[in-house]
Amino acid sequence: QVFPSQDPLDRADFNAVEYINALFPTEQSLANIDEVVNKIRLKIRRLDDNIRTVVRGQTNVGQDGRQALEEAQKAIQQLFGKIKDIKDKAEKSEQMVKEITRDIKQLDHAKRHLTTSITTLNHLHMLAGGVDSLEAMTRRRQYGEVANLLQGVVNVLEHFNKYMGIPQIRQLSERVKAAQNELGQQILADFEEAFPSQGTKRTGGPSNVLRDACLVANVLDPRIKQEIIKKFIKQHLSEYLVLFQENQDVAWLDKIDRRYAWIKRQLVDYEEKYGRMFPTEWCMTERIAVDFCHATRAELTKIMRTRAKEIEVKLLLFAIQRTTNFEGLLAKRFSGCTLADGTVKKPEVPPPSTNPFLEDETGTEADEIVMEKSDTDKPKKPKVPDNPFHGIVSKCFEPHLYVYIESQDKNLGELIDRFVADFKAQGPPKPNVDEGGAVLPSCADLFVYYKKCMVQCSQLSTGEPMIALTTIFQKYLREYAWKILSGNLPKTTSSSGGLTITSLLKEKEGSEVAKFTLEELCLICSILSTAEYCLATTQQLEEKLKEKVDASLMERINLTGEMDTFSIVISNSIQLLVQDLDAACDPALTAMSKV
Image 1 (cartoon, rainbow, N blue to C red):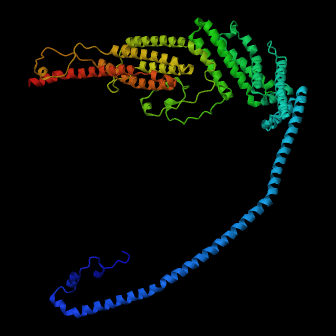
Image 2: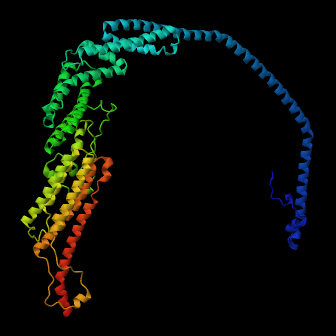
Image 3: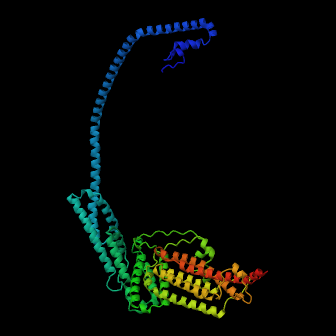
């Protein structure tokens, strides 16, 4: 295995007979026997020489091996000795380094402790001096200096949190808290004196002392700041609550403009007199406007509940329009940072849309008519982010929007009756072979009114009133389909079920099948075209309603039943046209059967 060989003599299963037969396979090959024998003898001599050389070489191997082993042992002993010497020297060096660095470590610890002690003593000196100065400045009402000093004292006191077990440190901490409480009560008293809560007349005014006091309030407990804001706004709006009490004439909806004019004047007056007194980050102007909105909403809710029977549609729409305009004005003026949790996300600008039907709803009435069929394949306009002030006042009108819904129900009923009367008075459209059946003009008028109502209601509310308006839309879509379209389809006394072999073989002499006149055919085509237009536009109306309504109410808008109604009208119109064509073919086919 170690030295592989192809020689047959080296094989483990060597057979001499087979080997000889391989060398001399025939009798003629025996002529070379001497040559083969000489080769074998030469090989035997070489093997003997090799064996002899190997045996002689092995006689000195044992002695050489023992000598090499002894030399290796000596080398190992010498190496061990050197390693031991190195280890001893390393231990001595380590001990020497420890002795050298022992003093350095002590000095390093001492330096660190000394630095900490000096820093702590400096902080303590600053804290003690700051507390004394703080108490003195508080008594002298030097709020400008107190604002900066108090913040520094609070920051220094934080370094002593782990030393509160020391009586002197705990005493300083208690003095700081007492100074803060005294400052808070003193500032509140100063504001109460400058802006008394009793009465509506503001005897005080802005001053540098109060401006500096507001800076101190920023450092104190947030409750002090909230109390200052609450009292100031309450006193600022006290006049409003008196002027627009429920029993005053100006409190009713027809004079709602006066409420918003009053707050505009007050905000201008505040900016002129008190704009620099409060810090900008307090957003006092916005807070006054927001509190005014909450108060107005509560007052309007109360007065409308009391005088609900006096609310009319025009009055309600007038009040809502003025209120939404005011809310839009607030959105342009303020960011809404004081609403809810105090954070307002920056509205994302929606990508531009190429759909003309999805432009702003403030276009002309002619623009509102268009609900083209091609718009269904175009991308929908993404909803514009909500105005943060939307509904802050106008939400109070939502419980009374039933007045608006009932008014629209009545108006749509009158509109359908007018369509019926106009159709009867004007008669069916005149036949025009080139144009075919034209769409009835009443259809466009109906959807223009629907679009106007939808836009108007969505500006008032996107909740339940939109669902109620949708129900009204469904009602009058069905009425239009039955009263205007199906109700005016020509009636026929006979219905043809199609031609059969039997009918072809029958003799119909002296009998004629009633056919529609050209005017009737034109009317059927007009109704058919109108129903197709209504079907497509109703589908778009459903999509627009779902865009306008709240996401939680979207599933409740479904105009499938009304679309099915228009589909039935289309089917009936086509059946009448096919029936007329069938009746027109009967005489010719009957004549053919007689040939």
